Length: 440
Ligand SMILES: [Zn+2]
Image (tube, rainbow, N blue to C red; front, side):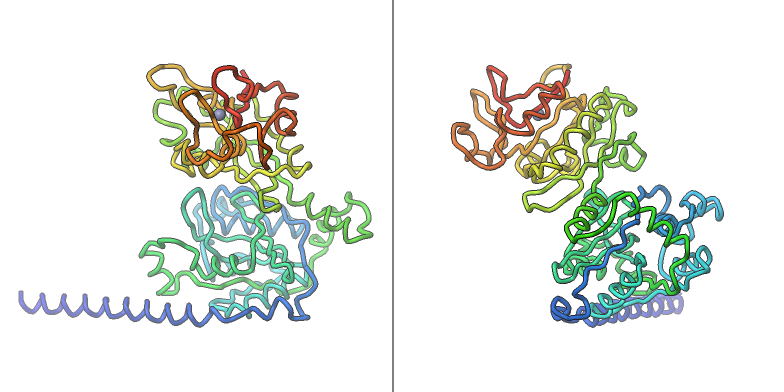
């Protein structure tokens, strides 16, 4: 018995030593890749913005590796889908790293795909820029938020405007992202990943996953890729001035989509905005993605869940608001605030569906039906004889003064909702809900 115990003790100590040593090595590797890249902004080599115009994002159903291959295939003029890949193997096999390279080489033998791991920041930027300059989207691995959780995720880098510090990513969570180099590298090095669970840390330590890694795709563009690129830009007319090109980029980034509530979306809202007592059938709800202009003047993509009865109205209204560059601070599901309406309003979040009974009754509100939406709620509080919400809206309670983001009858948002047959909470006689538009 004593002998067995000693053997066990030795094994445990041995494993601990390996784990500690791997973690220490990982820390050194991580420090090593984070070199100073500030010179790239002025480096002559990177002055020309590069952008792959014809990459369409899809909404991942099976795996991000497959989804990236699907987007890559479409860009290359092919028709391979994640579903095809899943069917081929009967299970998910291209989750990470070398396996992803192997799959790329199998599906796209016309190119040679290789993984490059633990690149220094400067090397990462250089290889990324080089690939984009050759007209190819760049598959890579990074931390990406899904709802309020970080995930290890594959996406495609499709643009780099280094002097202006804008990197564009086609993310198969269903949207394009424009981020700074700093944010990109924080996420490719997984430093942005808050509270990474130990098993993932170990995964990095033992080399299952890699930091600052991307995939190079060598070889000349196929005819399919060239044709797809022409088809993608053909209907946009001649690109005679840089202004036209900017316009075209904007068109590419526009997203105004409505879809049924997928299992992924349902899992995000189930038990939160879609409580166990929810009396609205899931089929009656729609998940929208809408482009909007933020308080930073930049284009973003927001998420809305609403009743299918107003989905088309909302798409139309948000598209017109976007074209008019109407500023909205954020458009997130209330589930990102754990269904807490007050917290969502305090963050000035514009949101729609949130199921609940009106306190002490079996009556449900128009938000519970997904038939009401609140816009910039912090600047447009709900005011009753007993006070106002959100609690931090004190500066915006006096509606006789002028300030930015105030909704009144001269406001475009007001006008668009009224045109679409909504009523405005600011017109109510007893209480005033300046953020609120609803349809019966
Ligand atoms: Zn409301």
